[in-house]
Image 1 (spheres, helix red, strand yellow):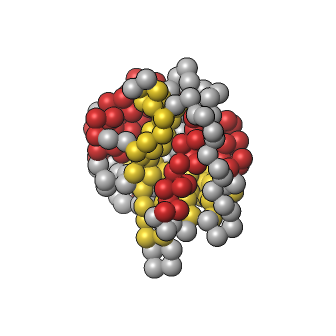
Image 2 (spheres, helix red, strand yellow):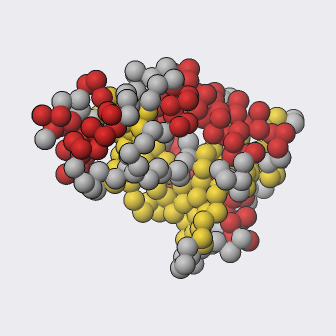
Length: 260
């Protein structure tokens, strides 16, 4: 799985997570101020779970959160492909599938691919207090929305075989004062179709598209334990530029006195 979305720190609930799981969940990614005060503010909002993503180099913050009762649920690293330093690899000849841009009618098939392929991936599934069936639905919704909502993704590359979507990768464009770049939103290959070079081919097509859009670079977040995808990105010329750790903190398991 690849994903890019990071949630800015706000002392409020995550609407999507709360709706998905049926109880109040907050996302906080800036604990630069007092951790205990942030936790108490979210407790006042009746949050049951806090999800946070922290730069992996900030060991002091990670250890401080662990003292409060937060537990590590996944580790991701960010790969970047810089067009000024690397050329887009040539596409594989005689592919046993077709590559194209997604259409709205692909949304259901993409959702099914994501839900079956990714349901055991990531920080949601790693938390045994969360319903595993709902964890799979999250990825299905994410894939579908990336096909239908330009606020989620601007372009989706799909691999199709016999009119079936067997893999996809969605991307979002960003522009800053000094650069333009594309970031992966979500991608997956259908169960039973691994070993065909699908994800590599999709990524070459994605790089080609991003290059035509005058992007300076393309980046993707990948779980460190997803070894095949890590090998794919390294083989394509991507380099690791940063890493992050996702932690979950359940309010009913926290000891604010111990963490202080």
